[in-house]
Structure formats: structure tokens, C-alpha cells
Amino acid sequence: MSSKNISFRQKLRYKFDNLMAKGPIALIGWLGILSLVLVVVAALILTVTGFTQDDGETMNFVEASWKSLMRTLDPGTMGGDTGWGFRIIMLGVTLGGIFIVSTLIGVLASGISNKLDELRKGHSFVVEKGHTLILGWSEKIFPIISELLIANENQKNPVIVILGHPDKVAMEDEIKSRMPDTKNTRVICRSGSTIDLNDLEIVNPHDSRSIIILTQDGNDPDISVIKTILALTNNPNRRSEPYHIVAEISDNKNKEVAEMIASGEVTLVHTEDLISRVIAQSCRQSGLSVVYTELLDFDGDEIYFEEEPGLVGKTFKDAVMSYEDSTIIGIRKKDGRITINPPMDTKFESGDKVVAISKDDDTIKLSGSTSAEINTAAISSGMPQKAEVEHTLILGWNSKACSIARELDNYLPAGSTLTVVAEGDGINVQVKELSSKIKNQKIDLKEGNICDRTLLDSLRLEQFNHIILLCYSDIMPEQEADSKTLITLLHLRNIEEKTGHDFTIVSEMMDIRNKELAEVTEADDFIISNKLISLMLSQLSENKDLKAVFDDLFDADGSEIYVKPATDYVNAGTPVNFYTLCESAARKGEIAIGYRINEFSHNVDKAYGVSVNPKKSDMVTFTDKDKLIVIAED
Image 1: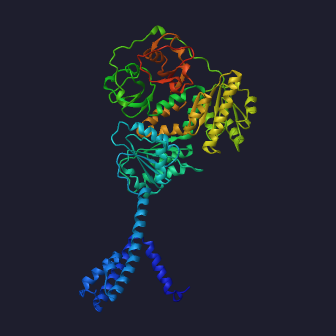
Image 2 (image 1 turned 90 degrees about the vertical axis):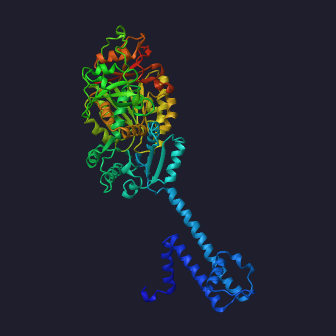
Image 3 (image 1 turned 180 degrees about the horizontal axis):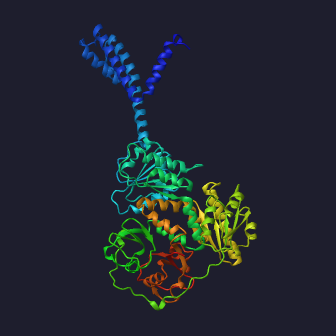
């Protein structure tokens, strides 16, 4: 259509559409101008024609304008008018006023409503300082918030700011339903993209204390994490001081890229590696997952760094025996190097800090006692047993299965076996590839449904030392995968009751809310993947130096946490204090950090019998089934 064929009506409609697109302010302005034109025209007519009311009062232009304006704003004003000429003019003004004012009220109401909705959606700039910033939204965010609420209890006016893709109101409602009481912490939500510079500016990362980046759902979740790190560190408006960024990464191949672009500002948690190591270690040592959870969460005992001038010149063993309410597990040298379970004769120098397990940083205090009461007669001379081949069964499959098998291979003697029972595409190829990468285990794959009771009975479960139950998190929704795990657990416990054979079961679940349902199965350990990752991210957001500590504890090289027979350290049936246990462990080059009472191994209210960092003067009597929790090299 050429410009010559465009009608006046089309031009007028186009102008009107452009006017509407400018929003309420433009409409209010044009309605105001229209009202002014109506008032001025009516006043001019009255002035020119000389129409007045029957009282004969003459009106100048100003007076006529005022009367027209009053009838525009209030139609009831014309009820007492007299004189038909005057009435007709005022009737026209009033009708015009009704149209204009009603439209104005509608525009104002709509504009205010839209503005309130916009404000509720959260697009305003966050003016907080020293806040914890969480970028991303997933199920992991709820345990993270729960942990930060506990960590913030002794802080003044703490704030958590969240930038996620859901609607702000939806995020706030879900947080409120999961955590009705946020204690002294304010939780502020903003909706937006974590890789958009404009959205990032809204949550004020430049004044944050720490930043946690969560992976998003998708085929390649690490891409969003890497892009978010880039958006933060390469922002032209970024602060000059380094950021304290903690991010989760799913694929180890992306770890080096993420570390490279962040220039030392980011601490990465490799989720698959973390869960694989915990599962591999826990399946061989029942109760170990409870110990890890105790160290990782903020409710109970955690790991702290504290400088103690009174230890300068003393040995590490002296430090171990010098604290009543804290357990010393390592040294942080003044140059930043951290060593867990150093040689007992290692001496403290000025500026060194102890790495301690304690209830809080203000509870790490020297006992003041010059010598601990040690019952040397109760110390056992038990020797470590020779490693025997072990037979492990993995039920189910996900991306962590291969990592678990490789991690197990670091602890098992040659001749051990690994049986995998699972179903799914490509498992044959993965198992074949895995066989070429491990040296101490022989792998046998049986394809089938792990919920099939007939299949489970045919496996002769009594031949296995350990059973690992993995959820199908890669191919099933979270709740469906956990349901399959729960059904399999019920079958396993029923088989155990019927056969009378005890075997350790380590079960992986995704949603922490399903753990309570699964506790009826009395599995030895529950590995709640999302929770463990959330706990690690929360801890590192408070202190990034903890990364070196956890790397050492989770790594097969160096010192790890072991759950060993208590009779290897003290005689059964003899009451001893924890100082005696520390002394016995120190003689072996190990650190005692707690114990597990077998009687309560399935009692959730007793923390499954696990006690970490007990008061050293308290007495305890062990049976031959109880365990001591130590940090040792093997």
C-alpha cells in the first residue's frame, strides 16, 4: 500500500497506537490537555455569547473557565443551573467531563495496579551490603538457606539475596512454605537471568560478602555456571577487590575452564566427584556419611581455624591433648598451607593456626590443664587386620557409578569383585570402558529391574560385603527415581530378615524429604546428594579455606576419615575418657575425632550412634562392636 492510499483513519489509528504504547503517563497528559481544551472552548463560548444564569450575573473569561472546570470534574454541579443557553453549554461540558474523568480514573487505576505488580515482581536495586548472594534456583537452594540461617544467628542484620529464573512471588512463597521462620535473616528474591549483566546489577554483587552459583537444569548445566562466572568477573562495573565465589560444577572437564576464567576468585565444588567419594567411602564404613554431614552442616560441630599463641613451640600432639571441647585435626601455616594429620612431632610457629572441630569459633580454647588423665592400662595393642578381598553390589545406575567404582578401586585389594545390576541404554558400553580403568576389581554386569523381587532373590545377596543403591537420577524425574530406590530398599530389608544375613546398605537419594520415608528400611547410610552438595557450598561460602581441608579428607591420598573397631585402641568393657582414646590414636599416628556406639546404629534420635568431638573428660565404655572415628592415612 503506497503512502497516497493511506486513509486519515489509518493515520489516526496509528497515532493512537503509538500514544497507547507510551504508557499511563502519556495518556494522563493527553487527557489533561483534552480537558483543558474543553474548558477553554466552553469559557470562550460563554464569554462571546454572554450566556448567563437567570440571576443576570455576568462572567468574564476567568470566571467562565472556573465554572466549566467545576462541571467537568463534578457532573452534579450543574443541577442548580438556570438559563437554557447556559444549561446547554454546561451539559456539553459535563458530558465531555464524564468521558474524560472516567477515562482518567481508569488509566490511573490501571497504571497504579501495573506499577504495584511490577514492584512485587522485584526489579528494584538491592541496596544491601555484606549479603550472601545466591545465583540460580534449584532444589539445592533450600538446604543452603537452612544452613545459612543457622550460620547467621550470631550476626547482626544478615541478608540472603537470591536471583533466579522463577517469578519473584513464586520463589518467596516456596521459601516461606519450606521455611516459615527465617530467624534473624532477611531473604530477598529477584527474578532474572544470572548471565544478564543488567539483572546481575540489580542484586548488587559488588557489595556482597560471598556468592554461591548453582547449576541449572539442562543437558549441559555447567554452561550457565561458566557464563555467570564470566558475567561477574568481567563486568566493566565490577569491584576492584576479589569476589568470594563458590560454584558447583557437574563435569570435571569444565573445572579447569571455570578456574581459569575466575583468576582465583572462585572455589569449585565438583558435585559428581564429591558424591562419588562419599558413597565409595561410606559403603565400606557404616556411619561415615553421618560424620561427614556433622562436619558439613552448621548445626553441631564444624571445622574452624584459630590462632593460639600459647601453642608456639609445642608439638602437634601437645595441641591435640590441650583442648577439652575441641578436636585438633591439622595446622594452617602462616603462609596459608594446610596440613591435616601432620606428624605428631610437628611444632607450631608464630602465625600458625590450629584446624579444629568445635561447636563454634569462640569455643576453641585451651583447657588450661597441664596433664590429661590417661588410662594407659586400657590402651590396646591391637594390630590392623590384613586387607581381604571384598565383594560389592551396585543396584541402579547414573553418571556417578563409574566414579564410585574408580574410587572404590583405591581402597580394595586385588581380587575384589563388583557386580552391577541396572537397566538403561548404553550401560554395557560404560561398564566395558570402566573395566579397562580399574585394576583391583572384576566387574560383572547383570541387566534388569532392581525392583524385581525375583531378580533380587537370584543375586544371593549374602555373598556381598557391601550394597550400593543408586537412584536413576539421569533418566527419571527426582521423585520417581527416589520412589524406585525406596521400593528396592524395602525388598532388601525383607530379604535380610528372611535370610538372617547382615549386609551394609548405602542408599543414594535426591530429595531430603524422602529420607524420613526411607528410614523405616533402616539402611546403614543415606547419601542425600542435593543436601551434601548444598552443605559443602554453604560451608565454603563462609570460609573458602575449608576447600583444602575437605579435599584432603575426601581424597584417597593422604589422610581420610575412617571408622575402625574401638578395640584396636582400648580394651572392651573398660571405662575410658576421650583423652585416652586420643593418646592411643596418636601412638599410631592418627587423630581420634569421635566414636560410634553400635547399639544406636539405627536410632535417628541418637544420630545413628555417632558422636563427633565429644567432651574429652567424659567417660565411655566400648563393646567389641563399637567403633572409633579417626583421621588416618589408611
